[in-house]
Image (cartoon, rainbow, N blue to C red; front, top):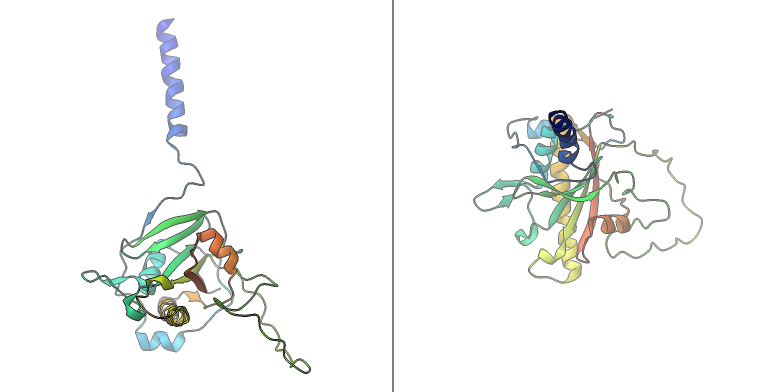
Amino acid sequence: MKTASLKRSVFAALLLLPVLAWPHGQELKTIKLNEPNKTRGLPVMEALSVRASVREWSEKDVSFQDLSDLLWAANGINRPEIKKRTAASAQNAQDVDIYVFMKDGAYLYDALEHALVPVAAGDHRDEISMRPGSSPGGPGSAPPAKPEGPPPPQAKPAGPLSPAPIQLILVSDISRFRAGTTEVKKEWGAIDTGIVSQNIALFCAATGMATRPRASINRDLVKSLLKLTDTQYPMLNHPIGYPK
């Protein structure tokens, strides 16, 4: 009887082991990215000749290698000995951070470690685009003035964007600039963001991926989700995927 009872206890304990060891579904962990493949893609002039902003993406998930290469190309470390980036920045402030919104959550790209650091769990990709009634202006901008006279004829809207598998939010932290007024720092941050944005666009053009830069961001929601400080400004949104 004692032997049978012991066997039943051991068997029950073994059944519990997978349950105890299984991670929680909502628990996000740091993701170490693959080493970038620095020999892939079209020559730069050919990439420029096919660069285009798209409005529709395939439902295909972005491969892990493509994501790894994309983030390195956007603003990764290309000279490790001096920790310099693929994108230039005023005063070498390296003020632009890339936040990656995916199905399971939002991550911060850590260029030094070439890794994704978890920031917020959950799928927020469709929430971060600007909603009707929100201000389209950039950081610190005033509401647009109402034009005088009859409204001009409106161009036919191009239609909504289809969902993209990944959304990148480019954020400039102006506190990293060593000098300059707040307004000048914002201007430098906008310029630096544009450089990173062009890196993203050229990488996508050279590798058969698809993107477009978008200033329409639900900034209040993004600041809340990412727990941004008063000196961190969401500048651009890059939907990322493959052509439809």
